[in-house]
Length: 236
Image 1 (tube, helix red, strand yellow):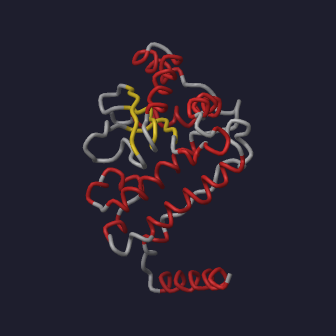
Image 2 (cartoon, one colour; image 1 turned 45 degrees about the vertical axis):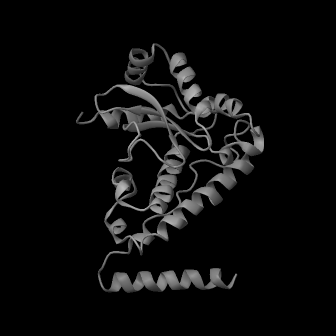
């Protein structure tokens, strides 16, 4: 309680000093926990409010806090955005990889979720690419479900746009993602990512990961996915 009372005045004073001397704020002020773009109850019944609150506030919050804790020992972080960090992650120690990846992965995860019935549908352009690469949206979902269910232990399943413009489904362990310059990762621009760590579903689904994956599709924010698809094609 005492720390909380002192923390805000301390941060405010430090901010005032940096502004006074005309210098940029340090990088640790730049990594922050984004708020959920909807209420914690908005994704029920597929994802319960308790899971959403714990997942966002505690798990994602811990990745942000731990990443900030790495900046003093890794000053190069001060010159990188969170997006840019992913593509240079091999230059940093494991703690930066795990927490930087965790922060990026969860930030994109909240954005690709929407209350049931509010996420829209794949755009004509994206649907055409899906049909070309997978045969149908249903075939994509089947392959994605298999990748998500088969990921051993903790990790993520992804729909990505590759450098040649094609779509692919892949998965990564722990908090790795397809933007990272690491061996063994199929690289591409993530369009859709699903968290299959147990903390994402265990309170409601226990060990029934396939049930969680099936329920999750009703929450996909295709409007966000469409935007990512379009932006990934700019300049391609």
